[in-house]
Image (cartoon, rainbow, N blue to C red; front, side, top):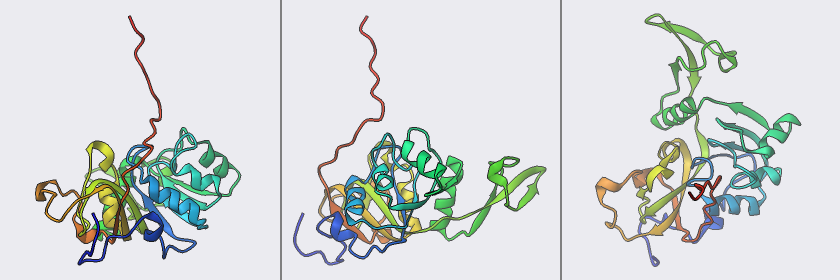
Length: 238
């Protein structure tokens, strides 16, 4: 899809979408493991060489792939997420003190991001009570059940990958690739969408719009992706 777009959200590629990203930025990155990763945006950020980054993601890459390239380039100083397994880069850099890590229960991570997008500054949850997660956090009791205070998470940028999008920024996702992405799109100052297919206005049925364009600042089409599989398991032949 090319030509003039009245809303001015369509950019040529990932590099153009990141033209104003500064060192020290905080970036939410959608996907789960290597599923649904905005691969072009991750590569463009690596090529850009931005440093001092805070990354908010479920896991900061896996098996040296995905977001792990930013760690390998020493571009990341802080990570907030819920899973470090399968990622030797984040483990090593956490141990040597070069990256600070805030390990967050997965449901709490999703809700902190959702709260950020909804303008809710904080909330109480029973998850993590009595564990290291609760250290330094306010605790209250509701109906006899202990709960700790968790702060909302927002970011300068959100990198989102969707199956389809239009020039207004309306997005539609495929299957479980929507994990974290809908909440992240609402919780960032600037949301950048990398879409497998950029379609004409009106081509996405309103019922299939998972993220309304009002939350999306920039969008570009990226048809080719690697989409690596983390673990390929096959059943032995009988």
